[in-house]
Image (tube, rainbow, N blue to C red; front, side, top):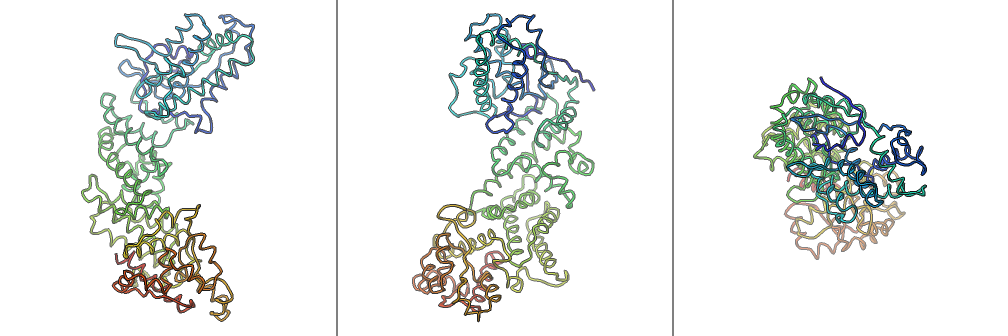
Length: 630
């Protein structure tokens, strides 16, 4: 392997060289607004700390006085030359920032009428010219226009928050940081601003050094890049993966594959509030290649980019030292499955009636549907829509039924989802429901200590009988009753609150809480013969609960039942209104609906143990229609 190092001054780095940026490098992401470290300000502070230790106004800007200053080592950068073109493999964040400092110093040199030869030397470090036109040393791809604009106009032509890329946005924002910093630092603690500006330009260009790491052979670049990343350069796992996969492709072919990669990654990163690129890759590799819990963990979000190249996985994935497979992966699986994932994310956070179970799983913060959906889909699957709908629905169904049978355990549910990955992978759609049914029954049997050989229904009342306020999470209860409300509203064509208001909203007048129909008061306690323990058991069952708007819930919390009925009447909460006699008189659609569905809705004038049991059984029947029969 050929690696050389050379000490370079900043002037030496920017010597009319038209740099290219290698695909290993990210966009220009340094940003003092969003990054806690403040990389631009930190770099400037480091430079000025050393400069200010030795500078005073009595020093004229000449070689002898400059020689009295200690040199300052800033950092390193990595390059690789291909067909006479020098590519920056690592360090472009720093070099782009140094270019922006150069541009500001160029404008300061003009303002203070510094010597023409000095202004020209700065200019030559920003851009150059050939017989084919002007180039900017760090002006490749999506940043040339911004750098050229700043060079020509300083701060006089900044765009109004409309940027073509992340790189362009950060270039403009960081230039403002640099401009403000230099204006302040070079103007303070001096009686001769012109002298200080002149001397600092010389110091900046001739006394600050970086080490250039030169990689002679292109095939060695991925390995060296990864080693440097391992030693502390903060890259995301997907950026390391990019280097490992695209690094195998010949430079003459790479543009086609790089364009696909960058387009998909940019789309994934724009959806950061939903999920990110590393989550996609982890879900994808798990969905296709994890056969047990250990492998599922090995392909986790911070591990997958290394582990897919070890023999255990490479025997199946075959992306290690395999340029042909790397190209196929990018053009086929990566492109197809990343598009599917982006499609799923949009449905995950925005309720779409046609794909609502994806959204429902999002309401419950259960993300296991993503690898399961990717697992069942084949490349360019002609049944993808049907499979997406079915898997998301069955995933919601299993989660809900486990909760409603007091069989849910988060760790066991995650293990169950991992088991399903291999079982449904690439299976025809006709087999999927039976696989999910079998997994659900196994989970219920384990939770209820039932012999696995015994026959069991998917949803039995004996396990549902005692679930309620003390066995289910508040969020799940809100979700459960939201589904009940929408089931009723959809069937009688009446409006109701959206799922977000019912389940998620935490502030404002539309906040909803779980309401105890049997309030804790002396009147209700007498109905239970003052048996406090029995009263608590019964009032916490699902049949004695409903969802209600926060303000109304608070005002009715301790009312006797006959007063609660007045609050429930015309409340807009159908399950609450169904307790009231007036609801049946005024709503023929509802009475026809419950008759056709054989649902035992009825009004009540008291609410004791018998009534709670009736309502509990009613919710069981509705639950079957929503999650089992539908």
